[in-house]
Image (tube, rainbow, N blue to C red; front, top):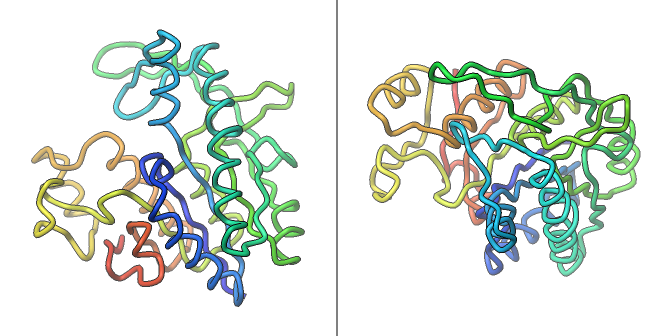
Length: 260
């Protein structure tokens, strides 16, 4: 059976109406294949942090996760957003099960060591780098027709929870499950030379364009992370990798195909 891993960005998670389209598409995919959904939620976590008087620090699209940030990530991603997504799935008769990478556990991590970024040593706090993935729990659920909906938390062997980049988690799971299709869902539904101009949409994207985009400044931060993850998925043997909108899931060719 075809396995599809769908990664939903935080902005897509925050919208309500297009999720009906998404879950209707997932329901169709689940009738003939295995579907895993991984979601982010950084936008919501940042909003909740602001309401609490806390301003998270971001470095090149990646969140520094302090003790406070880790609590907020658990409240929003594993709590509010995961529950809301499962409820939306059930509305469309999808047998959804809410999980995090710590359940099973699915995703073992190690604490990220400090990085040198633009001459500054950055300690990312409670951010985990994936050490291993165990799909046993997912295989059990998928074989019974369930759709796992996964929040990007990881755990180490001491039981410490970590915030993990959702793109990275989804790619690691797609690789471990030997998925045939990997869809990165974003608001604009693909890669554009100018994010404000739909006419600058690119139907395909390769390493040469990536290098040019970084140099010219239209590939930055979060999109750069997604593209790197897309290339990692290709290198892991996943044949079909697309960046799409929620509405584009039924026909990924409407988005941007990541190619060698």
